Length: 333
Image (tube, rainbow, N blue to C red; front, side, top):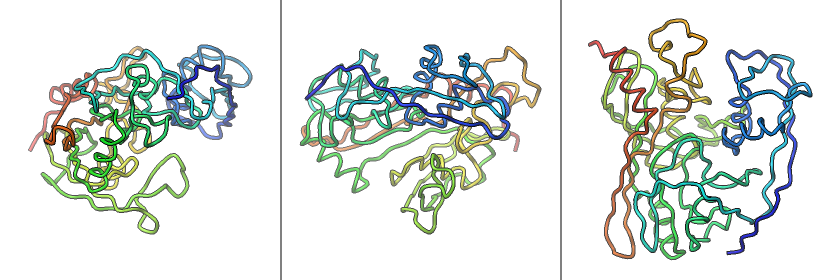
């Protein structure tokens, strides 16, 4: 693998704020507008003075105002170059051919759109030298993705031959995946199939939507695990792998994922929100990203020739959200 450690060049983006936002911190806003950059990366750039509002440096906690002009200078990745980074990995399983990683939220899977560092591929490249190259060096070892703020189980491949086998399983829909999500509202049916085509949103390019005109087939099956007053914990089994599929499908049936900054009513969730009370100035959010977690994956390992199944528990923020809902929003029949 050709790995060179170079000083990245930069590119400037300018955003003119033409409308008012309620409680929109600048780090959250920029993470939304620049989806290939993690919020941690944005916060680092703000701290370094690479983000200016009306020509002045600000803190990550700055609330953007109508009329602001925001400029941000971001690093650009040199073509086909990966910088290995000693980022801790939660390795669930590893052999000579593949790895299962428990990906944290706020981690981009691979460098893209000028995002050269902090990604899962940067971490994988540091951890091992033999990653599959079928999708190119910028996606070394990557056979499927999770959204940046979706946590959970991810498969990474070391061997090109094994990669080809497992990629074919994905193509034939033989890989089984299960997600856990807390959604807004009380889902009426105990289980159902959502079969709605998904394509790029007509006006908001960072979003996907239900597109009956140009959308690709998208199928998700959900089961209710637990109901609360105004919320539901569901298990979702996607049969296809479209971008933002679960998030778009759950919104389409009127139950967006909690704290989904693109598809729900809020970009975070506080105890005061659940209690329907006014938020205190020092209150800390229960969760600051979509309450969606890749819980389980099942596939056929072509070397030992056997089915393998792995799962990871809910992370602390989603677990805390569920625990809090049980306490303050118990279900009433």
